[in-house]
Length: 264
Image (cartoon, rainbow, N blue to C red; front, side, top):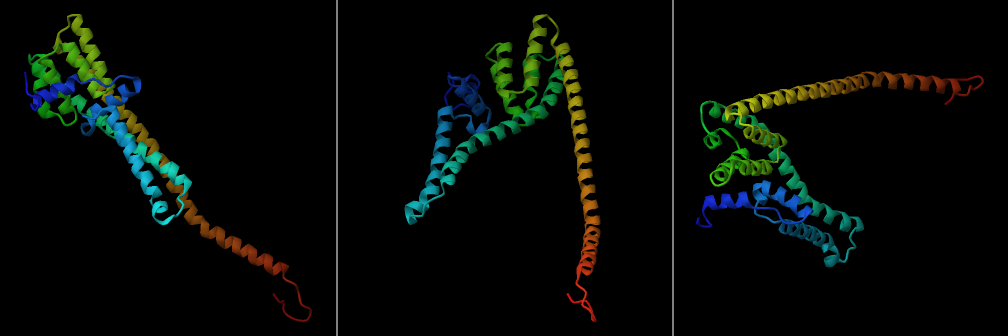
């Protein structure tokens, strides 16, 4: 009953949108719906954009031949259109990677807030409804879609769609754990508290891994800088020594002129 231009209707359309049929279109359609700029594109339109960009690059590569009869390079005719065709896909993958990192950083804040609200006696809808002001994009928009979905759909289906839209393994594991423990009759506050402790433990492990990796990188950089310093210090000495050896060899090999000085 809502008008099409209504923001709530657009939100429900995004929630209920399904990727196109086919394994390739399904994967690409899932990627496109996660990026705001390509959310309304279908896989066919995205491939049309790729083909159009490749055609424009091919036209630019053949333009000197059309205008000045200068033969183009065969490698450019083959390589540049392929790179232009792959450029939108590479941009899409970069945006997905950045989106996943931002969601992963904001997920502990969401879980801590929801657990605090649940301990205070709030329900799952009230806990999520108060979460968007403390979150950053893109997780804030996904939580807003989840709130709209929870108002019209059952909790398991709404949480599953939320996990699919976020595409984060931690959120998928959180949804499965909540559904399993809710089916066993465990209180929601206890479930969220356990998930909060688990998320904090995972965050500590990730920080330890980053610290270890940074220590290895710093040690490798230190070794490289030390080798460069040794090379800078000993290179002039080696050159002087080699020049002295060369001069001694030339003076030793120079012919001796009888009754006079050595001539070069």
